[in-house]
Image 1: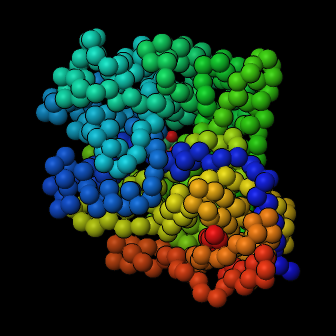
Image 2: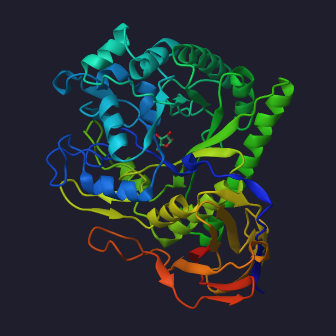
Image 3: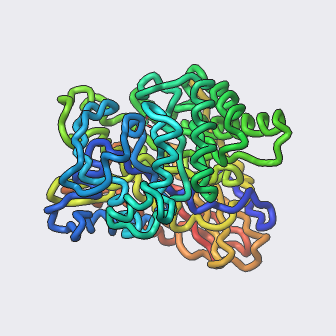
Amino acid sequence: VNAKMKVEKDFQVGEVDPRLYGSFIEHLGRAVYGGIFEPGHPSADEQGFRTDVLELVKSLNVPIVRYPGGNFVSGFNWEDSVGPAENRKRRLELAWRTIEPNTFGLNEFMDWCRKANTTAMMAVNLGTRGPNEARELVEYANHPSGTYLSDLRISHGYKEPHRIKTWCLGNEMDGPWQIGAKTAAEYGRIAAESAKVMKWVDPTIELVACGSSSTYMPTYPEWEATVLDHTYEHVEYISLHRYYDNHKRDTPTFLARSLDMDDFIKTVVATCDYIKAKKRSKKTVNLSFDEWNVWYHSNEADRKLEPWQIAPPQLEDVYNHQDALVVGCMLISMLKRADRVKMACMAQLVNVIAPIMTENGGRAWKQTIYYPYLHASVFGRGTVLVPLVQSPKYDVQDYTDVPYVEAVAVHNEAAGELTVFAVNRHLTDTLGFDIDLRSFGNASLIEHLVMESDDLEAANTADQPDRVKPRRSEGSVAADGTSFSAQLPKASWNVIRFK
Ligand code: AHR
């Protein structure tokens, strides 16, 4: 039986906020040092930014990048990272057990953002620090001039304020691994008080409160309810973080993990709305899925690393074909809830669980997961249409009724284009996929991009950077009036574009 999708122009989930395609750079491993910043690299510009990496980032069209952590931020003193580079302090970095040289910091990151055509999502430290340092950072970054901290920024060579709009109130504060972890009530209070004074410094900013670090946290979802009880009127978003793994080498289950993401989103939306009702509030708090990806390949290697090195190779997952399918499913999950998931950050961007890899001093290349992220970011702009999809299904121990075909459609009215993203989770069969576009009148196919591989574990490396990549599929979509029938190869990521 074929899978089917009916695409109705007027039945809309919501506008895609471009920030759904954000990413993340943490001071962790080789994300900064050897990743985006490597003075002396043949491609480095006058600031030491790798232009080969900048080009790969720019192609992804990343609207926002979270910085500087992650777990790192909970022990970070932002003052260490500004001013003349030769005066900056080296610090023991306790989250990842490394040495942080601070030769790249806040101002360099803002310059890098401008060169990468992106913006910053800045996190403040609510682990070892609190409202005072948070409001001071907002003053340093965003206040125009005439105060000690804004003039300090100017003396560092940045006359114009950075005008950073989006700020995270700490990171994963529910996790015992976090420096300065807190109970929900402790965090809720400090987040609310920090939010208040940060907005008093700059009322134009918007804030993200920390939600649960994962669906498996014992405090989830009571954490969200308690945190929002304290912060509801002070924040615009609550964060969600989720990584999936295939340690058990059980691909049907691994590919079904986005069903957990669907539930996670549903639960957090419900919790936000419950607190909204409880507070008789008119305001709606939305979701920032600001860490998501597959993460597990590097776990073993990371356990063996010597501590207290500068920028060692940490979390350097080498992604294979099936990881890219999970990433595709996760993107579809978030698009299906574009009404409430307004921001999201693929974690991370370079070298650390990342779509882009580099060698120190050498090459840069695209991992398999680069492609679904690229396609969604480039073609998934506009309005998400209500996904009316019927698909044959399968069961695994953790999930029943897993659709073989996961799909969503995005209508870009301005460009006059409609894009269907679809993953075929079937590991052995090509599936027919009927797409009914009657509400679009005379639609015609632009192209069918497909990423498939006979080897689910095939990956890209510096020596074989193009082993897994999408191709344009010819003759795989048949048209019959306003209906189309596509062939989705086994275990494939598909982008079917119409105009
Ligand atoms: O992205 C890697 C780490 O995962 C982040 O530092 C942390 O927030 C999460 O646990």
